[in-house]
Amino acid sequence: MNTQENNQQLLIEYFQNGSKSKDVQKLGLEVEHFIVKSQSLESLSYYGENGIRRLLETLSPFYPHRLEKDGYLLGLYNDEYSLSLEPAGQLEISINPKSDIKAIEVIYQKLLKQIEPLLSANDERLVTLGYQPKSVVEDLTLIPKQRYKFMDRYFAESGTGGIHMMRGTASTQVSIDYHDEADFVLKYRAAYILMPLLLLLTDNAPIYKGQPYRGHLLRNHIWERVDNSRTGMIKGLFDEDFGFAKYTDYLLNLPLIFMLDGDTEEYTQDKTISEIRQKDSLTREDIEHVLSMTFLDVRLKNYIEIRFADSMPFEYVKGYLALIKGVFYNESLLQKINNQYQASETTIKQAKANLTKDGFEGLAYGYQVDELLVELLSDAKFNLSHEEAQLLEPLELIVKSKRTLAEEYNEKNIN
Image (tube, rainbow, N blue to C red; front, side, top):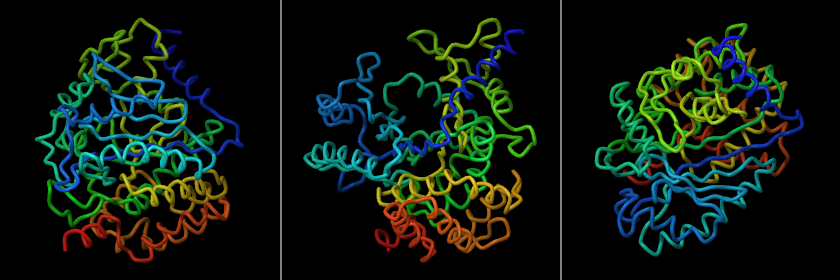
């Protein structure tokens, strides 16, 4: 076995080892927030006397662990959750996988009780939107993290959306488990089939460049223009042999942008891991770095990460968690989704284009999107407790009104 074959096998084994018991139905959550001035809604910088660094330092006594680089505090964490920063200082709250959505809510509310009084004292607050509510991205500075400087440099040439993606966007990401390769394929394809519907259901980006955005799916529009080699949908998703090996082939040929070398990071531009590690076996650190450098809408690590929802207020996040749980831990429903629409890479892209243009008046797979969402929300309830099924109500109201969160925001704040 040569080095390339060995490294491919190491990646496949990593994914195989990520399999969990079929009984495990946990959800991991990441929600990104803008930290803004309460009146102007302009985002705070990491730097300065009242910057985000000051906030993290104030919070640090509550946490046993600090993430520091070159003397800069960039994150805080414990065994259940963490605070970290996205490129322009977006605050990510990441909660470790839990089976109970209520347990996730308790942790999130506990974090808000820590953070919000500190922000309020300085006339600042958290905002959950898919794009900056006021700031112009060209005016925002990156946090002191070398990898973001490398990414900024690379994305300036790979597309037109990189500056907006890094500095302007915020998301809600949910992770789910798989119990074997077949289960991974079933869930992974279903996530992409549902992606156009869920993009619309979680559309919460009402502002672009400081002005009301009258279209739909703004954050997705931005991501589509970042870098075709690492965003969107993996080619061959519906091939008969799609699985861990095909995902591994994609990773081995992904331009890495930068590579870790001990405690330092080296800009590698278009070089792939196969070129960089021609004679060396991949370490676990190498594997985890490669996995983190793809920004597909649905990403495989040792879990499946569904990445395409906008940042939202937590009542909608809870509903989204319940929907993901009700759909993706229901094998018969996953089979139905995989079979019902006869989806392909082409029809998924077409559905997304339709909804970008027409919103809730659009078609997905030849059906009215609101009808599909009503059916999906109804089907999801069968795998949920009564309490968790009730969490779907805010999403049901969105579908009933045929008004996205972004449209509601603009109606309340602009008109």
